[in-house]
Amino acid sequence: MKINTIVPIAICVLVLLNSCAKPTKDVPYMYDDYETKHSDFTVQSEAIVNGNLLDAFKCEKKIDDVEHSIPLSWSYVPEGTGSLAIVMYHYPKKEHQSEINSYLLLWGIEPTVSEIPYKMANSSKWFMGSNKDGTAVSYTSPCSHGPGKHEYIIKVFALSEMPESLPKSNSLAVDLNTFMSAISKDNIIDITSLIFTDTKN
Image (cartoon, rainbow, N blue to C red; front, side):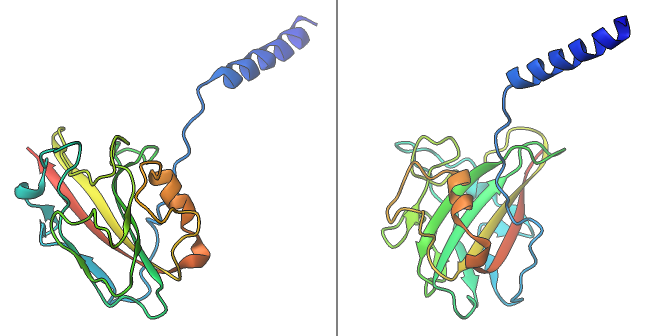
């Protein structure tokens, strides 16, 4: 009888503990397993050589909480693309992907645009979301402090149209979760990626 009494009590305690536990933050799906359909649709940067970010583009100085963005260019936007969107992000915990930091959020880019020069990510020709810390509408430059290689990913989304749920203006309220939630699988024509590292000795 004692055992039969203890088991239900133990279960109740576990349920209560779980209900009091801090909820985990939802991690957006980043299409890391996506395979580019159009092999000539590529993205590159003069700031990245042999897969490594050049020192001149690391830890950019903040001016009014805004940092200079790296130059980007892309080629052969797929036919039928109505709008482009760009995200740059990093998994700070190498052992798992339960946390993501975003460094660049852009949308509403015309498919005729093929490059973003150095410092020019915040342009009136498209729209920008929040920086990594959510303190300003800006790019955040990689500035890894821990030793070893830190991997960053840039994705260019070729979309059939600009996501309806994203504003037609710069917005501090657009963070990574908002940005990725707005991009529908049905709206994606193709995705191309650029992976690079920031190495600290």
